[in-house]
Length: 257
Image (cartoon, rainbow, N blue to C red; front, side, top):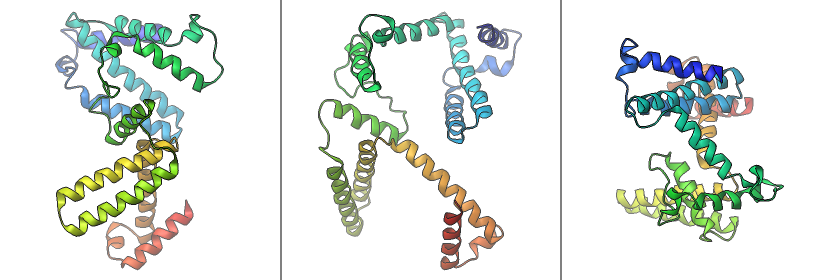
């Protein structure tokens, strides 16, 4: 806690009248981009399994939380103690099997019903009129699609099995092909969206969040493409190759993975 208190004190000093002009100029709104950036950098460190980077990025993200709490404290709204108190209370409330208000559970799947039941007793959840309420619009689109589907499935609105999901993907591909051939951009966009939504559903059926899967696919493509450029002797040299030559380099890069 000494280290945490030191961080809070440093943040207060930076925001003081004789502190840092840049830090003093920041608001909740201006810090949004940094919060997003630090979160993405943390995810990258997790994917790389890089402990040193992970430690540093966790600190950068913690700074954003302390920064927002400091701004709120200066405005007389709440402070970092209130932030810590709220999350501590929530953790105790949502873990009755740990903190003694019900019997112990043995598996993670046993915990989920308890977690959901406790959530429904909280004022912000009790006031919701739809199962889909409370999902931020600003979530990455693939992640939000996954969560929308998962919430609907909790009420029984779901595909009966993975084969049905895959069959629907084939159907959506056919509808997209037809829309493209018809030449209507709006129809093609709608069908493309339906296809993406259904592909996310396939991933959900496999327990694979689409956001994570696509991020790893992006990283794989980037790694292979950089290898192709390097093998060709640089970007300009790669661009001068024929399609067949580029395909050969792609196959070489795949083989070296």
